[in-house]
Amino acid sequence: MKIVIPAGTGQVGTILKRELAEAGHEVVVLTRRPVRDGETRWDGETLGPWADVVDGSDVVINLAGRGVSCRYTPANLRAMMDSRVRSAEVVGEAIAAAARPPRVWLQMSTATIYAHSFAAPNDEATGLLGGDEAGVPGYWGYSVEIAKAWERAQEQADTPHTRKVALRSAMVMSPDRGGVFDILLRLARLGLGGPVAGGGQYVSWIYDRDFARAVRFLIERDDLDGPVNLAAPEPLPQRDFMRALRTAWGVPVGLPATKWMAELGAFALRSDTELLLKSRRVVPGRLLDAGFSFDHAAWPDAAANLARRVRGGRDVTRDMADGLV
Ligand SMILES: NC(=O)c1ccc[n+]([C@@H]2O[C@H](COP(=O)([O-])OP(=O)(O)OC[C@H]3O[C@@H](n4cnc5c(N)ncnc54)[C@H](OP(=O)(O)O)[C@@H]3O)[C@@H](O)[C@H]2O)c1
Image 1 (cartoon, rainbow, N blue to C red):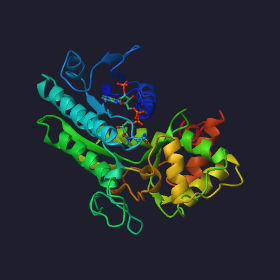
Image 2: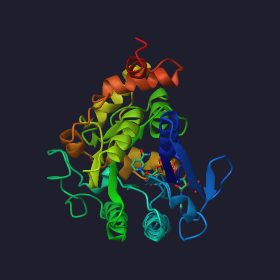
Image 3: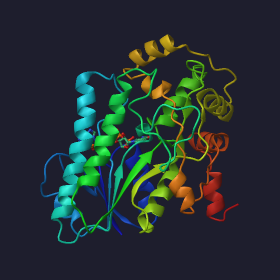
Image 4: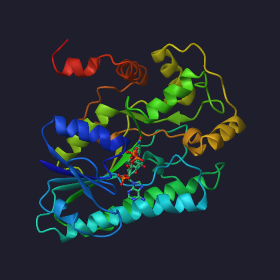
C-alpha cells in the first residue's frame, strides 16, 4: 500500500514508518522541512502540490500538531489548537479534492479527551469526556476542547469515499531517544521516579509495537470507524507505573514529589503538570471487542522489554513472533 503520513517526523511517526516500511509498504511523509528521501513539503495549513501525494494513496495517517510538552500559556494553547484543527481540515480538503481518494484516513486524537477519572475505566461507549470535572484546574478543560475540536475537524470533512477513524491514543512507549519512555527513564535514573502528588492518578500507555499493530488492524478492518481508544487494557496508578519502571531498570529508590515540587519541576522543564497529574484511565473497548490482542497488556512486562531494548538487547516479543525463540 501507499501510506501518506502528514507530520510523520516525530516520535509516533518514527515508530509507524519503521513498522510500515518493514511490512513492505511505501511510506510518504509530509513535513514542513523535508530533508530525507520519501519526504514531501507541506505547511499543514494550505492546499498545495503536496495534495498530489494524497491522490491515489491507500491510507492517510495524520499526526500533525504542535508538541504538548510546554508551558500552557495562551499563545502555546492557541498554537496547539490551531495546528491540530487546521492540519486536519486541510488533510480533509486534500482527500475531498482527490480523483482517487484513499480508502481510510486515520486521524490522531488523544486519550486526554476523557475526564480526569479514578474510579471507572473509560471506553468509547461508556467513557465520560472531560471538560466539566469538579476539583481540577479550569485550564485542563482546554486540552479537552482541543481534542474535541480536532476530532470534529475530521468528522465534518466531506470525504464520502474514505473511512474515517480517530485514534484516541494514550502515551506511546518506545525506546527512542526523546520519547516519553526515555524521559521517564531519565527521571527514574536520577532517583526522581517516585509517586507524584500521592501517585493515585492513573497512567494510560501503549507499547510502541502494539500501537503500530493496532494501526495496521484499523487499516484492514473496513467495519471500524469513528473514535477508537489506543491504550493497553491495564492502565495503572502513577506510583505503580513508576515502581515497575524502576524495577525494569534496576533503580532501587524513587523520591516522592508533592504537587508543588511537580509544579516547580514542570516549570524548570518548561512543561505542564497536567501531563503528570491528570488521571487518565482509558481502556481499549472497541479494539478488544473487534478481536485485537495486545502483545503487552501489562506494564511491568512492557517496561522490562523496553528497558532491554534501550540497553541494546533483543525484543523478546518480537523474537517470539518471528519464531526465533
Ligand atoms: N507521543 C505520544 O505518546 C502521543 C500520544 C497521544 C497523542 N499524540 C499526538 O500524536 C501526534 C504525534 O505525536 P508525536 O509524539 O509524534 O509528536 P511530535 O514528536 O511532536 O511530532 C509531531 C510533528 O508535528 C509536526 N508539527 C509540529 N507543529 C506543527 C504545526 N504547527 N503545523 C504542522 N505540523 C506541525 C512536526 O513535523 P515537521 O516539523 O516535520 O513539520 C512534528 O514532527 C501529536 O499530535 C500528539 O499530540 C501523541
